[in-house]
Amino acid sequence: MQARLVSPIFTLWLAATLALPSIAQDFSGLARLEVAQSQVRDTWGGVQVDLYLSQPVPYRVFTLDNPRRLVLDFREVDWRGASRTALLNADKVSDLRFGALRPGWSRMVLDLDVALRVRAAGMAVDEISGTALLTVALESTNAETYAALSGAPTDPDWDFLMASDPTQQVAPPVDDGVLTIVIDPGHGGIDPGAERDGLQEADLMLQLAREVSEGLVRAGGVQVVLTRNSDIFVPIEERITMARLARADAFISLHADALETDDASGASIYTLTDEAEGDASQRMAERHDRADLLAGLDLSGQDDTVATVLMDLARLETAPKGERLAQALVTGLRDANANLNSRPRREAVLAVLNAADFPSVLIEVGFLSNENDRANLVTPQGRASLVEGIVLAVQRWAAAETALDPLVRQ
Image 1 (cartoon, rainbow, N blue to C red):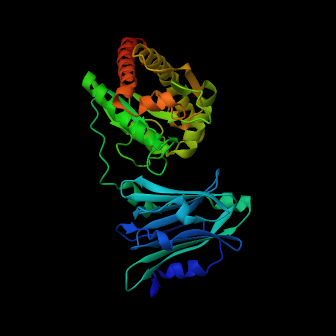
Image 2: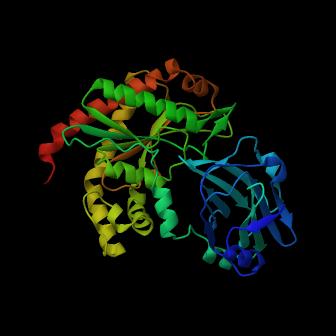
Image 3: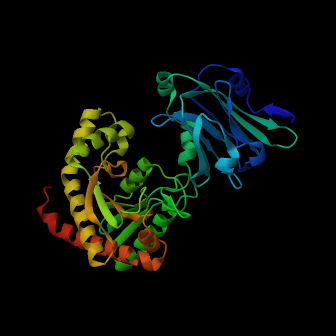
């Protein structure tokens, strides 16, 4: 291959032995992965990733901790023909996965068994064929250094590209006189969720979310926003932000777990534990921009204490609303003859329920590890009782909340 490095900086990167916490470079277009020539392999003291692409594309490389992962983002790679078996040949990497990150973007994630830092990364482009070789070299390091170097890079240019997505549908304009329900199909894209017998949680929850949305709209008086309407990966923080921008009256996340045994079955509804509410405020304060913590209130310039107190005050109203919604869902699903878990009302520390400014619930609609639940989830007829129960619950909950409005302290 007659090759040139796409940037002089990459020449230094490929020769360097210094730790590089994150690396990014920009091109344009869609690249096809040449699977036969690509691999992830062990090297003396580390791991090397070699990805042969049909053309150069924008990419970035960084590591994450707890658990340890190497992340490669691209705009955009066609993964057809690729598999974990074909690509992974490294003892220091326990797993490898790839897929859609969001429309126009792709991601590859390597689960690292040991602490490895990015020693060098670069993309060489063949001047004759236009093909490209992305090489990422990892070397051993200690846990403290790994943790210090890990984290998604702060890159205004890259963040702007990631945020600019013309293929994403804009949420419909909000009518304050209409109930706004945000339906969140769990997982998606590179994160398929639970898997059993060729079924993926992400696919089933997207289909269920669409059916619930249709049912709510058909019932009337409800505006529905989906956090995703295709098989894409949407980070939890972004799902919450979408609900906030839509001024959600309620947020309902749909999931279908899988356990080691098939004993558990039926739907259960989760809210955030009382003990976790304070911790949730702290996590949100640490991880979100100040302007994106509470709808209609810019907390820019405020410290964590102020932000946390204001979120805790907001939860004095939204947490009871969430509890009432959860109970309405239990009753609605039971009245619709949906299969309920023996303990349908539960609480847990779940990141997707962290928002303070609107009530949030998570419905575990069943278990892919249970044969009967799987059978119900794969057909519209099987999902019909879930749809009916959720729609009925939202209608009853909305009517009850409207009746309570005059009693709420203004």
